[in-house]
Length: 276
Image (cartoon, rainbow, N blue to C red; front, top):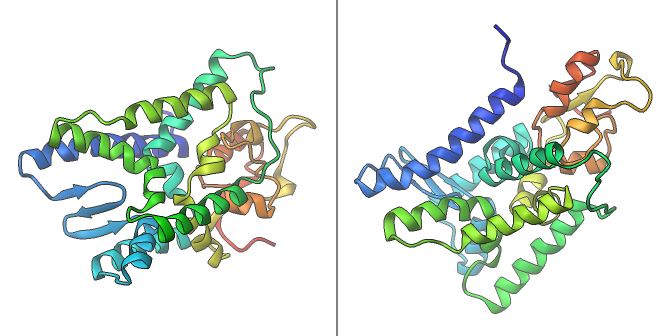
């Protein structure tokens, strides 16, 4: 029997989470409330979990931080310090949809089709969106602006609205349009250049240089010149062999490059180790 790969386990967890957030509002409708909430604020058997960005906006606006929000955001940031931005690749339901769209593009479009090409630093653009949204919220709005850009939150809200209020959310159309644009661009645009939820998680992981990350050992690499299966496996178009600052901020520890590398000398591995 073939041993499951990292991607197999990751995909199982992604699908499990995506299905769970469909099931939870159905259970809540029948007054079964061991799990409640969405990706902005969630309770798992009494344990609070919260989106750090949502907590930051609420705290700055109200000058108050509740214990539950502090614990919920602290858990998310603490996990990012240890595991990096694994939430994006192992948990986020939009990340799952975006990856599947990317895989569809690779299957149905010719290999010579490269789609949108850009040299923009994705994390820098995310920071700009982050601070513009935060500033706009603090000056002009009473509703956390950046919460409206949380696609995992909108994913979970779709089912909350439908099963609890019998309301079909426009978020379905919004997510579908974004995925169509990514399909045409052959690039995971939202996760690379827009998602403001990832900014605080990236800041948290950069605090700990010895967090979980993809490590590369050059002497074990057996790739032929011009053939990089690890690069081809990365849906974010990152080169795992280049331990640069861009990789440090953009890599979400999905492990796809490690799976692709296994047949080529196992030069890539997950490790808790500071970059040299």
